[in-house]
Amino acid sequence: MNEKTETALSSDPTEVRRQKLGQLRETIGDVYPAHFHRTMTNAELAEKYEGLAPDTESGDVVTVAGRVYSSRNSGMFMDIHDASGKIQIFSHKDTTPEEARALLPMIDLGDIIGVTGVVRRTKRGELTINAQDIVMLTKTLLPMPEKWHGVSDVEIRYRKRHLDIMTNEESKLRFQQRSKIVSGIRRFMENDGFMEVETPMLHSVYGGATAEPFKTHHNTLKLDMFLRIAPELFLKRTLVSGLTDKVFEINRNFRNEGVSTRHNPEFTMMECYWAYADYEDIMDLVERLFAELAVKIHGSTEFSYGDKEISFKGPFRRVPMPDAVKEATGIDFLAIRTDEEARAAAKAAGFEVEKDWTWGECLAFIFEEKVEPTLIQPSHVTHFPKDISPFAKEVPGEPRLVERFETYCNTWELGNAFSELNDPEEQRARMVEQLEQAHARGEKAKQLDDEFLDAIDQGMPPAGGLGIGVDRLIMLLTNAPSIRDVILFPARRAKVD
Image (tube, rainbow, N blue to C red; front, top):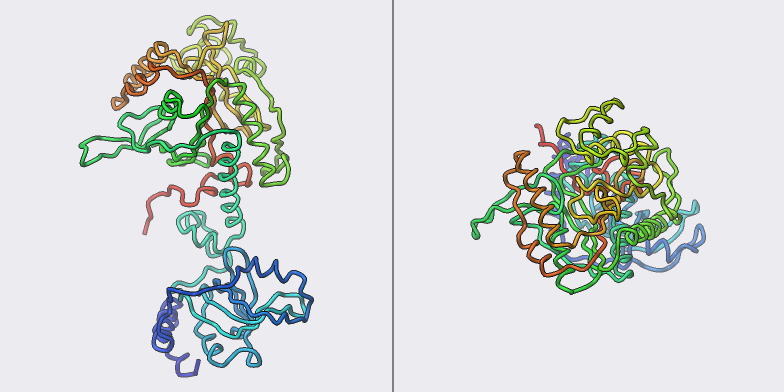
């Protein structure tokens, strides 16, 4: 750039870029070309020329492209990044034509450029391209954040995820690992004989879990609808159909509830149903899946989360909920016969319980208070109260408990599984009771899913069912402190100007 041009530029960084854009339009025409062919990515380049000795030129001409992350000596040295890594660009009068070098003053950090040149390795060992041609592919109008410091504000990181990933290698790696984990779950399930299906996200009757739904309206059908809170009832109907004995779905669920480090209003689950299996078969499946994913990400079943060392090597500890509560508090719920006695025992031990809570609700509450915080290594907590498990089969000989387990690790629930209830009369009775309880709580929109009950009347085979919270599992495997660190675009509070 000549002195006159430099003087004319504004002091505002964004305005400077707009002025440069105008000048580029006048000199080169198309600043955002539709076509550009690169011959290899930066990672492919690094792999191909890994053995190139220092202070050696390969003689090969390549074409690369990427975003400018750093510029030194008035653009003589630039680092450009693509999704796979970085490469250094060298532009000098001895190797780079004047026309290409004339573009250098117009290039800002963040611009996307294409470069053609000869591959060499510098005396210091840096793989470099001696530029023979430089093409502007995208002129950016906003300055790049200072490396990481520009997006240190947590809310900005989540709101402007593109900047977070652009400047934070840890975030970039985490989302690459997320993709590997989701892909790994899908491959594991398919290799285990499960068939993937897709079920509706818009439900006229919501169910399959206890949660507040998001509501919407279909104009043409003149029908109030709900974003699904779970795909369970549709997946079970797939089992009834005989399409497959092993079905799964990796799905987005929506629950109109609170936001925390472990909760987001929309989240990813893997849900599956396995005909002629039970909850113990599902425990084995969970252990095999978790171990395979840990090895995929860490090369081992052992890994760190914060200051804790976690092992996904099976078998996991298996403990019935009443036994875990007795061990933690001394209260033997199996010796308690009535709801009144359960509430009295809880109060005597210092727990505040509601006056209408059942035996099972008291047991589950004390478990959450005293046992959950101690479950660091992966554990299957089994034998849940039937009061809070309307879709699970009873434990033989103990009708107050059901064949259900939840998998915990780092005090978090990661998975929930049942030996699925398939007695149509019992299923209807439990769902009617659940509906009455919901209406008593003021949930007037809750309805009985007659289409599901009709399908169960047709006959569903005995089955084991499982739901895994994929986001929480990814948090563990990538050492993420918050669920918003593993969801690419998480829910955020309203923007305040």
